[in-house]
Length: 257
Image (cartoon, rainbow, N blue to C red; front, side):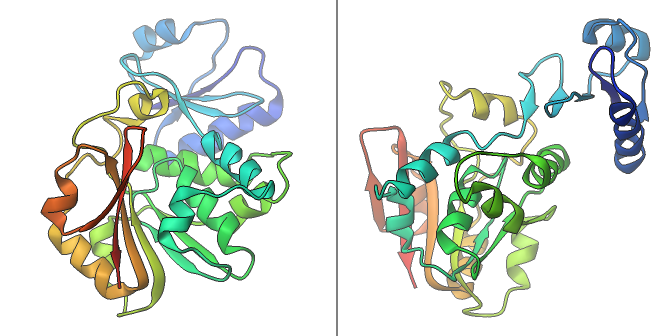
C-alpha cells in the first residue's frame, strides 16, 4: 500500500502522509498531478490511502472508496434527540451507563448509537479485526466533527481495538458487560447498500460461530443481539429464538441473559 495526498497538498497533509505510511508499513508517494490510475501503474500497487483536507480514504481499483462517516448513525441520533424510538436500542434494552461490546464494528455506525445511548458513564468497545476498516474507524472517531448535539462526544468515547472477537470474548469474565452485539457480514448480502459494498472483501466475512455466541451469552448481563438479513437461517443455527423482523431487509435476533 502507498499513501498519497490530494492535488496541491499543504505541508500538514504531506506530513500526515509520511506519518501514516510509517505507521502502516506503506510508503509515502508524492501525488504531483497524477491520477490514482497513473499512480497504480507507476508504483505497482492497488491499495492507496488518500489524505485530503476533508478525510482519509482507502482506494482499491476494484472497490468503491472507503472512508469514515457517521452516515445513518447521525440520522438515528437526531431522531433520538427528538424523542423518537430506535428499534435496536429498544430491543437491546440499552440504558445510560451500560458497558457494550460491538464485536464486528466495521465503520462503527451502531457503535456510535450505542455510545450516545450509554452516555458519559457508559463504555463501548468496538472490535474490528480487519486492519484497513479498523484504522479508518480509529482515525474518523478521533477527528470527524459533527454539528449534531452529543455526536462528537459519543465518537470520542468509543474504544476501538483491532482484535478478533472470538479471542476477545474468551478473555471476558462472566457477566462483565451488559450487551454483546454482532453485525457480521451477512450470509445473504444486501447489495443495495453502498457502504456494505465498499467494505465487503475487506472486513472479516467468516460466519459467526456457535462458540462466539456461547461466550457472548456468558459475558452479557442482559442480552446478546445479532443483526442479519431478515431471511437468514443464522438465527436458527445460532439459537436466537427471539427474532424481530421488519419491513426492511434487516432483522435482529436477541438472546436474553
